[in-house]
Length: 252
Image (cartoon, rainbow, N blue to C red; front, side, top):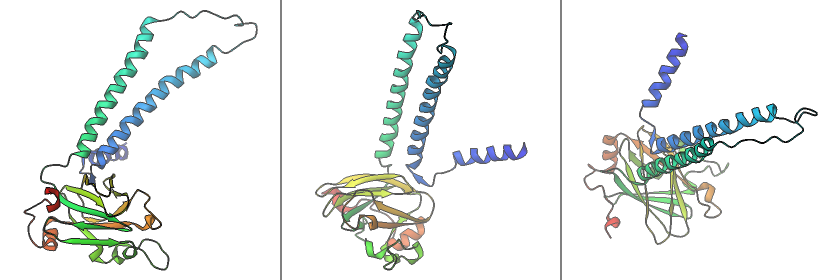
């Protein structure tokens, strides 16, 4: 009993703890809301259906004649109103989550990210740039991804922990898709256009960014590494405090 209580207490603490990355928790919440509602609807339909299937099954010499079933106005109203309420709830809840996922929080650090065959470039507000090419993150012999400690630091995009990042995306050639794995967000990088997304990673570490839009023969190797560090370490790498948080091309 004591172990069960401690396990429940640990799960409760995790539920209210700070997520690894945002807005991943919104995707998780929406997923579990749809999952629970789907399971409940399935059980509401399946259990009575299975019961009626057994109770009113055909029995020779017992229920061979058709029986009239009297309709229920109340039941018909319920199975019309209840689904409408569920659909309205899912629509409004999904829209609220979508708005949060698409709207970068105030004070976000803007970074320009450009996709190209096959890599990424990161440009910071002070003009500092980082390039990640496919051959910088793969083992030339096995053609698999290198471990983080084998990837050169110059190919890693530094990100301050706990600071929301607004990514302004574009592409030099074909359509790519910038996918931040821990934050569970992705957005297309389209030639001639500027698209946007945001994320925030709360725990220092190194995390993958992938391309989720097929873009050519090296698509599977088009990745980059986000190196998330404390704000003080980021400003040291950045070359000073983050005063101007907007990249210049956003004002054009």
